[in-house]
Every structure is written in C-alpha cells, then in structure tokens.
Image (cartoon, rainbow, N blue to C red):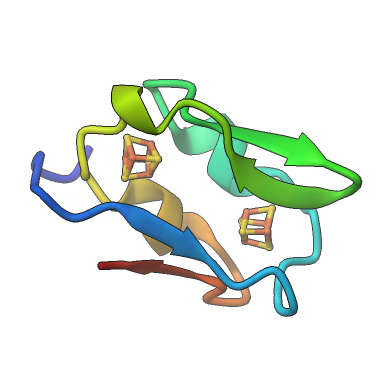
Amino acid sequence: MGEASDKRPKIDVDECTGCGLCIDVCEQEVLDLNDDIAVISKMDSCIGCGDCAEECPVESITME
Ligand code: SF4
Ligand code: SF4
C-alpha cells in the first residue's frame, strides 16, 4: 500500500470505464460504483495512499 498523504483522489468520469479495480484495491472502502462510474462515497475514510490511482488502467484517477 502507498503511504498516507494529504492528497485525495479525483475521478475523471469521462474516462472511467467502470471496471471496479480501484474499488477492489482500496482497503478503506472509500470508493463505490454508481451507474458503472466510480464514485467517492466515503472521502472521510480516505488516507491518501494513491493505490486507487495506481490501479486504474485508464488513468482516470488523479491525486490532488
Ligand atoms: S487514495 Fe487510498 S484510501 Fe483513498 S480512495 Fe484511493 S485507495 Fe482508497
Ligand atoms: S479503476 Fe479507473 S476505470 Fe476502473 S472503475 Fe476505477 S476509476 Fe473507473
């Protein structure tokens, strides 16, 4: 797992294919699927590790 940080994921909904890999990799269960698009459902639980962004095959998650 990546190191915790103050950054948080931002999802480009136009690029997301709904594959769900980011949801599976997030140990904090921050992410969810809504209408086949990844959404941030529990941002308060995010530790900023960046694993979701690294896992996304279409690079639709950026850490900001
Ligand atoms: S940065 Fe880490 S904790 Fe936050 S949503 Fe992504 S995988 Fe989950
Ligand atoms: S890994 Fe990327 S493409 Fe797949 S659901 Fe997550 S944001 Fe969307």
